Amino acid sequence: MEINFSKPENARLVNRLKVLNALRDGAGLSRAQLAKELGINKVSMGEIIQSLVDEGKVVEGVKQTVQVGRPGTSLSLNENHACVIGVDIGTRVITTTLYSLLGKPIRMERYPSGGFSSMEEFHDTIDRAVGKFSSMGQPPVMGMCIAINADIGEDGSISHSFVPCLEDGSRFIHLFDSCPFPVILAPALVCAAEAERFYFQTSLENMFFVNWGEHLSSALILKDRILPSMNFAHLPVSHSNLCHCGSVGCLETIASGYGLLIESERETGSAMTGRELVRNEDKCSRILYRACEALAKALVFAICSTGATAVLISGGLSNLPDKYFAYMLDVFSSSASMPFKDVPIYRSYYKEKGTVQGAGLKALDEFFFRRNLLLRLE
Image (cartoon, rainbow, N blue to C red):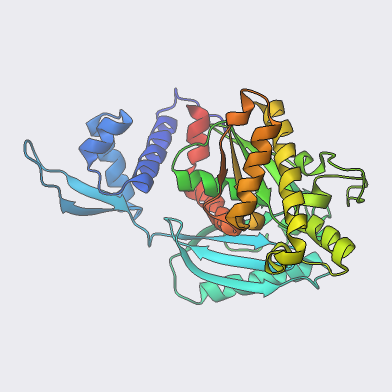
């Protein structure tokens, strides 16, 4: 989105977004405090606040207590002004969540989808959940974001999806044309990264983000954008195991949930998830340690290639017991050369819930806050 600042209405639009984002981060500020913090003159600030109050987006609270000068009135976002919907399409389950304007979950619906064979089945299931939300008498829905573990084109086309029946040009997004509010698609990886960025309340600048779950994916989080990549999962780390991409020995075949199924079936005769391997770690711990070692060595390569200054690991497998995470850190430190061995590696706050939460936050940013736009304008 290009902004022509010679047009007063565009400058006002940007200032309105700045105010909304400031109140999102810290409710209770007065007009004068917002004007000082954002560098907007008091007259313009007064006009902006009055229009937001008239629209029902901002509410006035109590008078502030001050030692000197005229007390201001505290301001906050009206959480009941509108809602958004976030949808996470997994390979086995669809999770649809209604969120308040402040990103708080109001209601969640989960439906099994492992047996679905057409995109219409996915659409109808999501539509059913949306119908339930609409019957609750909640504030109006501004929009919906559907997160899919795939690459999403600007026209809504889906490619490289782990749900093959969704790959048919941009037909899936057009199934929602009759929806009473706008609908967007987003890569699950980007949504998970957005959730982490919102939790930290800052831009996680130059951070390498890994979604470590059923499948592996990564992104580089920059100040004003998230650059996703599916290639991390397919770094060669062994000489065995055929990957679904057609190559042999990809990181995906050893370290992801998909890889753990392969490894556990090969070594024990029974395909097990990460959680099941932990429950049977007396005989399966070597499979988990091997996954952690492979991921650590792949991270060394990724850090050297991208120049990232930190790593953040999300997804269900980031929830492994501490001893496995500590082992991964030790392998990383012993494998990396200076100065990369000191790059910090963090575990996610959201873990396996990142994509679900991130879909809602992505919808809030797209249809209300536009924080990523403000970061790009900076």
